[in-house]
Amino acid sequence: MMELSRLRWRCRRGMAELDEMLARFLDHGYSSLNGVQQQRFEQLLEYPDNVLLDYLMLKMISMDRETNHVVKRIRAALTS
Picture 1 (cartoon, rainbow, N blue to C red):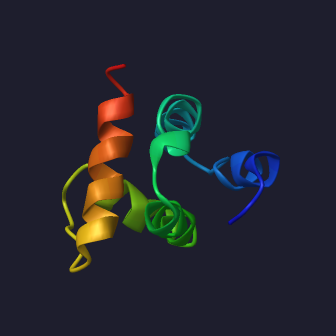
Picture 2 (picture 1 turned 30 degrees about the vertical axis):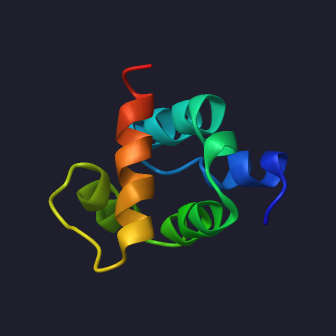
Picture 3 (picture 1 turned 90 degrees about the horizontal axis):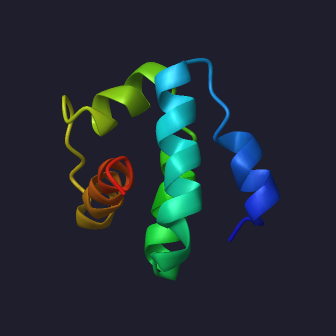
């Protein structure tokens, strides 16, 4: 797993919406994920901005259950 400061840097994207969502999630949800879910979050950060935004806006759904769980948790962090 990646250290938090490096992960925070990777959450900085080219879209303000993504920056806000991902930073908020790091502050209010990332630490409660299990190891597999944290890996899925790190994998999500490898996607291009437009694909990641489609996942977070539920325009696309992953075939992987853990990835979908992480997306749900990111969205939930927006309201916490």
